[in-house]
Length: 99
Image (cartoon, rainbow, N blue to C red; front, side):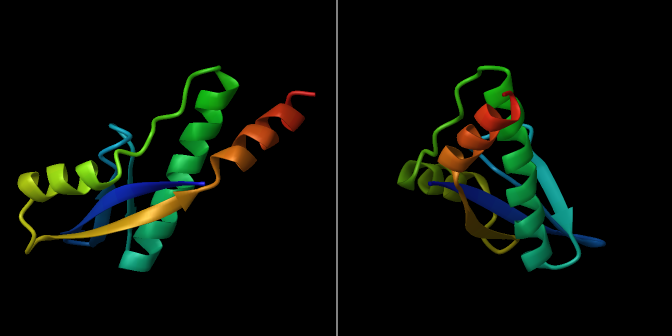
């Protein structure tokens, strides 16, 4: 199980999140909880595609990701959270789907 940091910012219609460890992945939601759930789903979907294509999954930068993003964002405007992704299950699902 890997843990990925996400940064969540307020938007006019709710919230938007991105994952510093996985550039280009984003999710939105009306509530923070919905945004986190959508981000988890977006990461899992993206990782499934990477596994199918034989690409290595990005590794979480752990504490250094928190330190880096803390320097980059206005802490009054963003929330930090993390999602757990069971990459072992995704790999197993990809293997069984290809059989």
